[in-house]
Image (cartoon, rainbow, N blue to C red; front, top):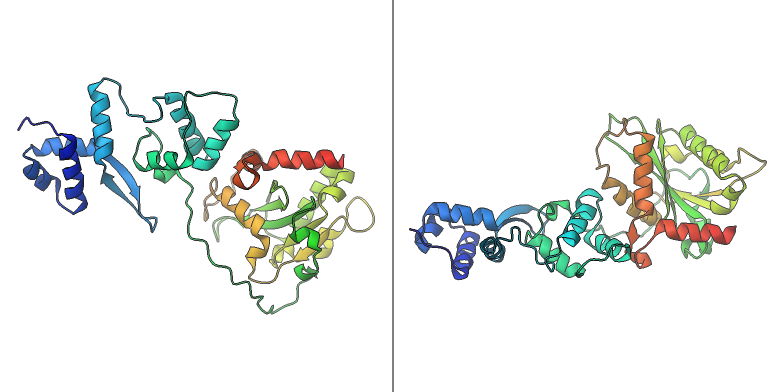
Length: 343
């Protein structure tokens, strides 16, 4: 029973296991001791994500053969990335620790100052992750991309009138994203019945730049107070940077007069527009950026104890995240460019 497994044996093992045979049955078929099969299984196991996003542990004959070959040569863990461990570690750090997607991780590496021995494509990177090539990176570390719901863009009848101006009266320049300074505003809430605070999030439609403010409660007065603080912070620039704000019909946004009224001068500081009811897609920029927040604060988590410093970190992370829609420039870079134009 001292037989070593060949590549052909490993392929047979993978086929038998995928058909539901036990490791004992595989050992009998290949005429090896069952401990050989258990050791080989550990060498080639990986987490496989199915099309319905369920996960299961599987055995890969290719991965098992790679590890066997590298162990034979005394070279340790197999890496197909041109044997470039520094590149592999950088990818792992960006995806596992910095919560980047594979696309964003490769874009950040390409833009960075560090030069590596090799480069890989996004498709290749996904294949490496699926095959368990990395030491610390698996499919579990990837942002979950569920099926997007098809939006029924038929406007539903509203049971009560919006307090302020309807989105139907919003200027076309806002819809077309051609002019800087038009924002969407939303709240991100924590565990229902437990989290008293919430996060007020503002997303600039053209650049996708994000502002996150933690509110102690979910009341309309707290929203107005947060906008007052923003106005004091930005001063005269506020009126150029915050031309309009689009919100939903939540109770926290019911004080449209308070949100629009300037705390520093007579008259309005901005214009507030209300979406149609049950039409979150009308604030699609908000919705997309909220998904990035959820990489750091999962839905249903109590974040009452999150500090302002932690919230500022998430805001900075989002604004420095490479965006595919901008050819992997960041929202922060684009926002600064727009501010320079105003100056």
